[in-house]
Amino acid sequence: MRREAKAKKTKLSEQKIPKLWVLTPTASAKILSSFNVKRKAGWLPGIYFLGDALRAAIVVIHQLPHLNQDDRKLVMRLEPLYQRDKEQAKLEGRLEGQLEGQLEGEQRLVIRQLNRRFGEIDTSLTQQVRRLSIQQLEVLGEALLDFSGVADLQAWLNQQD
Image 1 (cartoon, one colour):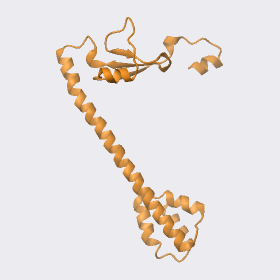
Image 2 (tube, one colour; image 1 turned 180 degrees about the vertical axis):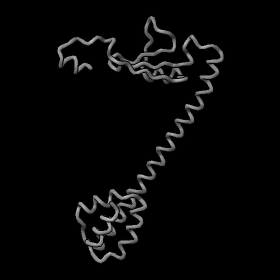
Image 3 (spheres, one colour; image 1 turned 90 degrees about the vertical axis):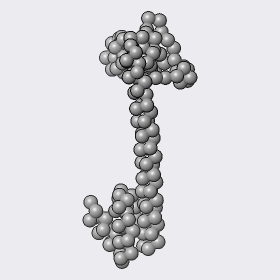
Image 4 (cartoon, helix red, strand yellow; image 1 turned 120 degrees about the horizontal axis):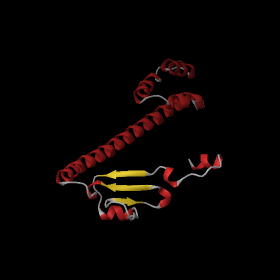
């Protein structure tokens, strides 16, 4: 928006620039201080602003004054769900990393086998091998034992597309 206003040589009102609002059910004083947040006059308790250049604020829902007792209980029940989702995201990230590691290992093994069998294979063929799935790499690892030359590899890769 700032670039567009500059290009058009118009003035951009600060109120028109979007702000990032981070909503969290709870946040400790330690976490808030790690973001170096500030309270601003005229704003409700529970709303903390990051540096002006960031145009961002953290809203700590359980600190907002409009919450009644039932709302507070709901927020407290949401916290474990948030933590569970956070842990699940970590687990999914670990699994994704493991799969990526397994894929890279399969790629290295098959490429080493091909290079040992046929000499240094062409870069374009190596790239095609790197695009294969783990299952395809496993099949290729077995199939290459029957290949008599690089032409067999090229034919096999062409069948995979």
